[in-house]
Length: 384
Image (cartoon, rainbow, N blue to C red; front, side, top):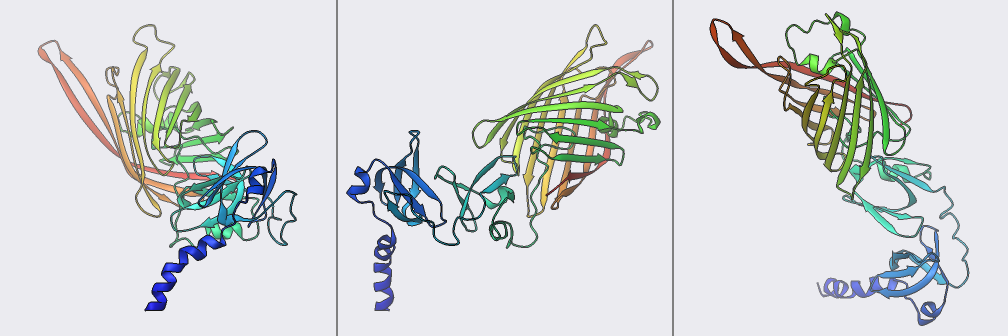
């Protein structure tokens, strides 16, 4: 027992003794080279060492803060790298919200992944936020992505809710595909980290009857629609986006469908796995002279509730809907996440406020609610 107590008392001293110490000569030197355990080298002027952190000022004036236990040596000349360290290509870490950065993998525990960026700074992020690793060494990707508890898959379709969008953008250089009710086909491509373009095609719209006012009509829409979304991150937990949808004039089931233009501002709070989205926009009908604008408010929730399951809720409210059109569209579903695709299963509801008038009877306001199942399939096309 005495031996254990003595070890506990001495362990902090032992750990501190293993840390490299900055000497007065290192501080006086205008330029030093810091060699890290992973083989990377940081050049700059050492400002000070506070406990376990060394502050280094680089040539461009920026300061880097590095952990002393990761530094192998400090020298006035560029050191030789230890054999077998730092010789692998720079690793590119891609997060699920589309963010990417290069650096060296340092460590991973149950709650955090530590990476040193090319400027020497350490960055930390949760393992569940990592989508993939590019240009990694032979074992880095295995360390980061393997050894997960069970078969865990993240929600890779954060740009989409059920009938609407979030302020998260499609990942740059990737195609996203979604099919709803085996009829509607949607494609979205990440042109840049902040801009994505899309198109939706429903080749069977002309043979689908909207007489029952089903919520499916809300999803299926017209034969062809074009969309574009521009998003910007503001901090780590907030994103702002502008989404536009254009529907050209085309043939409907009974009559010709007028062209539509939807412009919507989006705000998403949270990360790609757990977030809430608020939106406000206008649905514009250029072919009409009067009453050609409908204000729209959207409220959506995306929340990962287990290793492979995500809860989704997508709700749209029309502030002055036309007679006979929906005043609200409500939906909720569960998304089963897999590596490259996901399945959505839930329910839709359309609320319609109808004004009924007969010459011999007093006018009546009647609200009707129509329900329908929701079935969707999501797929990422291309390399994982």
